[in-house]
Image (cartoon, rainbow, N blue to C red; front, side, top):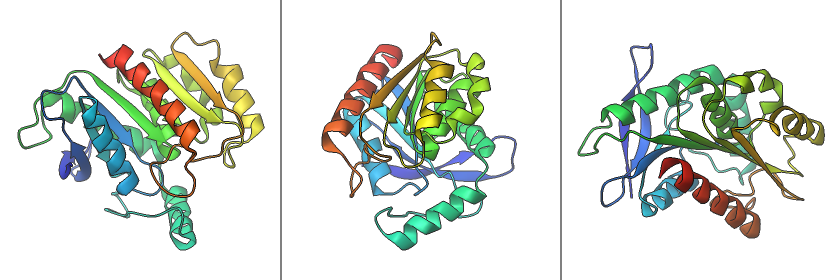
Length: 238
């Protein structure tokens, strides 16, 4: 089990919260777990806790700290789902990349507090909005490896792909209700030939299929995607 800590914001006189889970021994690398639009909820914390079992330091930043700090929502409850959509509309993903970069700096400088040591290699894995931010982090930061699950609006920023210098993997469910077939085709056209990018399609699966809990999870698809993610991080983060 992890605990909440504070990270210094980049270029702002502010701190933001993040859930941090550390392995029993020295971490072989760190992975920033970028939430969906539902905050650092139990599912995201569970993803972090699982990563510690694989020997990683896991850090999940509170993306909405500027206007809804500490929010935790359940996508299976309609009222909370609509609340999350509202936050998504208010959110500036450029701020999110800055927060990811701030987390990278904190991890590499040993500035997470407590007894957590400096970790040099840092990856990220993101879901939905977090999947988009994982793509943006791959293009805009020096993060060592990135994974995005059902990332939204990536097709609208394919011009940034030329800046991706480190490995990126994207998981794309073909029946995604928020990323239509046209957007998926654009992603393949723009990224299939990139030497640093790997795309995996999941036929017939919908958005959120790899969530840890709740109605959206598809067990077979989640296990396949997560096994690919584990192998990817083992290769690029050690």
